[in-house]
Amino acid sequence: MQEHNFDVDYTVPSTKQKIKINKDFIEVNGNKIACNDVKAVKYGVSLIGGSKKPERKHYNIDVQSHNGESISIKFSSDKVEDLLEEDHTYYYIMSGLWQYVKKHLVTEYITALNENKGFGIGNTQVTQQGFIMSYTSGFLFWKKSKIELVLWNDIKYYLKEGVLHIDSISDKRKKETLSLHNDWNAVVLNTLLHYLWQDHRKEKLAKGQSI
Image (tube, helix red, strand yellow):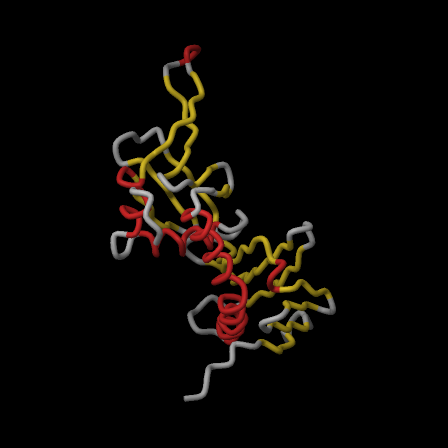
């Protein structure tokens, strides 16, 4: 059976951005980053205008290398219904990004957890045991900032309007939010959490077992 080709070679009609994605590199208008040099990604589709009657869709994909160089893919649609031509363009580009970049980043995070190294995203740290969260305790002038580990069995997560919420089940003060559109690798963390919540992987991780 022939393997599916995830290569992207496309020029966005509205912006004239020339995009190439393959197993070796991502290139936009001649600016190139090697896939194995990608440190972080962020992406999303935003509805612009009033919440009840949005006026247009904005599509955004950003890739950052280990030395801080970045590539941005941006385009918009004046229509807001589903399955527009721009939606197909976005999913076409994202299929290449997922295959050649995001899967690798998810694997890197899994390896870090298996090796008990952990990693940081936004203002939070993820470890083999759970999330290290900052929160405030006390009242008025007696408030204190604290940092504590929230174990995997005390964590719930959900997505709402492009924001990833990670909450302690037992203590509502302990919570983190990450924007899929704006926070580097929040989209990677979201995929990782979905993976951990299957087949008792987070429970295995908490016991120090490889997943």
